[in-house]
Image 1 (spheres, rainbow, N blue to C red):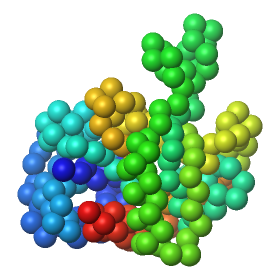
Image 2 (cartoon, helix red, strand yellow; image 1 turned 90 degrees about the vertical axis):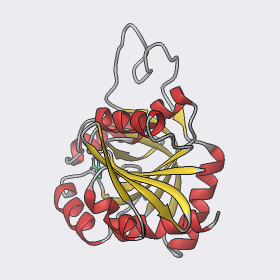
Image 3 (cartoon, rainbow, N blue to C red; image 1 turned 120 degrees about the horizontal axis):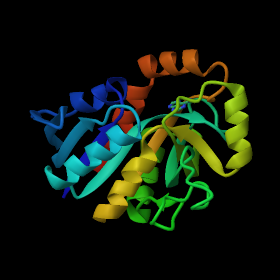
Image 4 (cartoon, rainbow, N blue to C red; image 1 turned 90 degrees about the horizontal axis):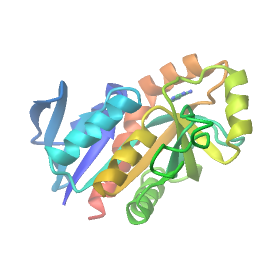
Length: 232
Ligand code: ADE
């Protein structure tokens, strides 16, 4: 069983790489893939870079070239729904692209020719990831549900409120998950994702995001990944 651990930014992955004793760097598609072990398990760690296209490319290379059996994304997100606050953790049950709109040809948010607007994460891997979060970060408030992805850093209260009105069940917003979920759907590879809330996607989002990724993101990711992989 080979597990891919993916983050968008170095700050989200660096402490995970520190847990790998024997990683070998391999370059593909302009990215560095770190192939090795974590808690004795076969792991490939990689930075997808930011945005949906970068994330989809990364997923395709992980699956086709590195032959991973499952993909886990760990990183940060902006809290969208009321009550999803900085420091909380969101485990994704499904992803949607909030900036996809081929209407009137297809309904808004529907991925053309898939007949789907939401791509579910793998139920079993998601349950394992939730259990890992509970072990790694006891006392942290955990939410499970829909996460919205788009090629926008949402950094105004006005945009956040518009997204909340359009997608009342979306817990959080980020920039990669829906792309990986769609790629994993195509290749039939299990996918799960966990996001720590770095900001509220509001007028304070920029400053909140920067301080959070410097201070907390990598530690959270490493603790969760360690708990997931030590469980077997
Ligand atoms: N990732 C973390 N915070 C975000 C935000 N406000 N918008 C998009 N992606 C994010």
